[in-house]
Amino acid sequence: MAVTKENEFSLSNRQNDYYGMLPTVNNHIVIALDAMGGDFAPLSVIQGAGFFLDNLVDPGIKVLFHIYGDKEKVSPLLLKYKKVSNNSEFTHCSDNVLANDKPSFALRHRKDSSMKAAIVAVKEGKAFGVVSSGNTGALMAISRFILGTLPNIYRPAIVSICPTKTKSFALLDLGANVDCNADSLFQFALMGSIFAKVALKIDNPEVALLNIGTEEVKGNDSVRGAFELLKNAPGINFKGYIEASEFLEGNIDVIVADGFVGNIMLKTAEATASTFINLIKQEVLSSWAAKMLVGILLKSKLNKALTRFNPKIRSGAMFLGLNGIIIKSHGNSDAISFAHAIKFAVNAISENLNQKIINGRTGIVQRHIADEGELTSDLAVNAAKSAIEKAKISVDEIDLIIVATTTPDKTFPSCATIVQITVADSLIKSNNRIKYALVIGAEIMSRIVDWEDRSTCVLFGDGAGAVIIKSEMGSSGIISTNLHSDGNVDVLCTNGGVSSTDDSGKICMNGREVFKHAVDKLTASVEETLRCNNLKITDIDWLTPHQANIRIIEAVVKKLDFPIEKVINTVDKHANTSAASIPLALDYAIQESKIKSGNLVLLIAIGAGLTWGSVLLRY
Image (cartoon, rainbow, N blue to C red; front, side, top):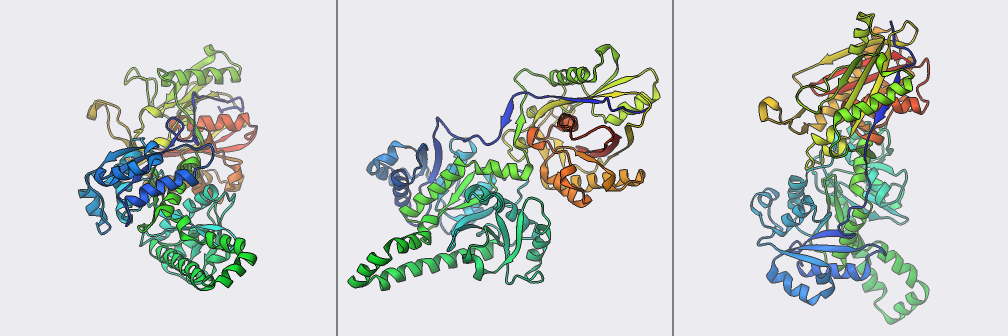
């Protein structure tokens, strides 16, 4: 007996949850200001906020400030700068982080600092970004501790936009990570590429590694290792190495370095620019005749060039990869510099930069969240009805129903058990009385995610898919399966259960380890299937993987040397829906006429346990 091409796949999803919405409160972008950070605080902060409101706000954008600091020092300034006062809320803080505080000391002991309070405001949703001129190490440490990192980001980096003679480029890391391995540099390149697409409006930014030469053999182990990772990486326009002497030419859009080298490069460039600008002002424009000559011949061009390389208008640097917009302005920023740092924050929020980084790292663009009161069984029933209708059979003809879910309606009676489609196939083969089997994957993952943990909650969605399997002799059907499990790998689980915590718990995941295991085990499962069936990878018409995230899919495809164009990818449409993932992907592929009659299709999946496996079928 075999499964015929009459198999039908369907889905049921409710309430689209689209990424990319502009975050506002009452149509205002809210920025938290650390009023006590920096050499000239709080004056530079309050004056900078005023300069921003007077000169830098784009039409149609409304900005409010939440200002945190010492009321004895800040309140008199707010009385003086009425426009800032009228567009802000102030919160007193009894402490502030000092320039010479070690990050660990600031994190543990500056409990009521203005810096921490501003970051907490982002965590609690009172603000969407922070601007601070305070201690860089402390700002990173406190931000990372309170906000955490974005999904699949393990080491945040500091990025800034730098000028060249023709255009601007993104430079990272600028000091967050002094020692970096190849994986970190690779991740910086990916984040930098996404940043350049959003901040610099470049569709396919060119990325290069900063090195002491352009030959592949030059550089330390980390740089050379990153080169190997990047040269064949999908989705990134990698151009190799670049030397420091070339960066002002404007040929590269993103330059990647470790934090030690990047910080020195940036400060050297800024000091050179400042010296050059001051030299022109002091020497070239020192006499009345020179001023007249410049005014007549070169004023507009000279002003344009001086403005382009003026460090004050490029004061802000972003902590890229954190779960919130954190902008660091120079410690010696004056009002104009701080105002431009605020502008940087507003732009990043307006462009929803962090969400676009999530999209780029996970591939998720939208997902679906079940309505309040809607149950997993409701989704499953809707998917089943649609599949039965498409299969052109009646409900009475269904002889077997199998439901797979991790989010049942009740503990018992069960509406689901975690099973594979191969179980349905074996049951049909062992029982001649079963003609049609209905296999359903249904999940409401939104009810077991921790919505405070954005490293996981943004990855999952709700949905259901159903498959009708018909027992019939023929050339199509399930050809082979393999299933594996390893209970020693505890990297994906919930933090509770009925017998341990009296509830279902919330999803906990070690993203880095899940990624490694998923890539290795899914690749091995494909190779096992090919070996057992005496096939080559080129014999597969369509690969349909579990839709966890695009990075896993791309990494598996790269290891297999399989064309990405022949991979069914729907993670952008519904995120990770666990048991519903592959049925939803199959529904899409069939409805879009990708998978056709006679195609050889390989399904691969991995889940908690860890458990993993594959199904090879002829559609």
